[in-house]
Length: 364
Ligand code: PAZ
Image 1 (tube, rainbow, N blue to C red):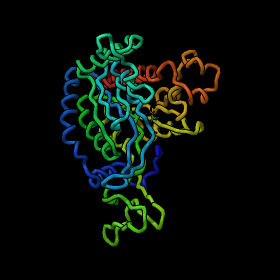
Image 2 (image 1 turned 180 degrees about the vertical axis):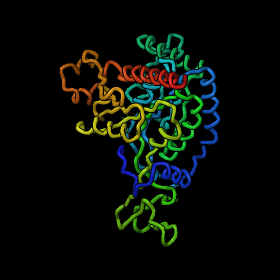
Image 3 (image 1 turned 90 degrees about the vertical axis):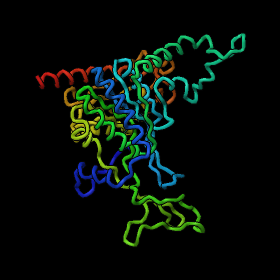
Image 4 (image 1 turned 180 degrees about the horizontal axis):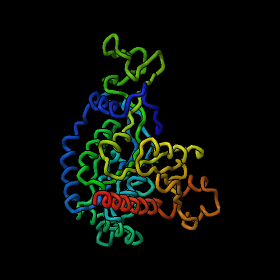
């Protein structure tokens, strides 16, 4: 559900935004998370440090208030968690707004199902649990970077689950980041649902699939039926479009920050075209386009200043067995030898410095 329907009946993003937050409940965790984020941002603002908000993972769309069933967006959180590490290496403080239980910076190296941390451990002669000799160096490198980020309080990890939580958090963090001015950067790698169940059309209880138990929940005679309901033996799901928040982010919530969005496609013919379309529509700084099957090997940068340029894992750094194979074929079965985020993030950081310089010279 990465693509979004247009706003119905020509409503502007601004009014849709106000309507959205007036009618969809503030998450219970926001009041707790907001002061933590404020303190983190203020610390780095006072040190004149650049702060990147990295969003990561998919957003879920619950079908019931007491949620048993939900619709989800594809994303493991690899792009976001990996990029967060490279932003930290490039001197940024990072707010990592991620889907709960998706991959995290640093621990991602040892948490994937094929990378279970227990496989890195053994017992020494005295019976103590230690890291296997062959993994010592690799683990020490990750550990050092993780400890440095902690020592400097440079990484703030905040979770979301639903698209509603994501949107409230994004707005809150954007407002809190305003004092950073052009030192703020938004790197929106999360796969955000384009459709959702509005609070007013959400049923309370688990939708019963058996006609013997199903009782339609209604909100009064004139109201539209619940977004998810049974019609005979079929479950009918009728979702509303999520308002276009990128416009609000660019124009109102974070007008001085650098804003980078991602575009995921499966049809290669559409990728650059859709990325350009998004750039023109929202007038932000950069769209990074990627294809589902090749996203770890190549991405396309689309920006007003730089046009269209591809970043690719160099051919000699594709895995050995991938050499000589078609990119798509190798992408389905291999991991690249170099993380493409190690090429993406320095490029983004360079563009950000140029943007900051331009902002400074304008204000002189
Ligand atoms: O999390 P992951 O590494 O599995 O996938 C990353 C991604 C493809 C979700 C991301 O690069 C992306 O394109 N996000 C935006 C998706 C969209 O809404 O178009």
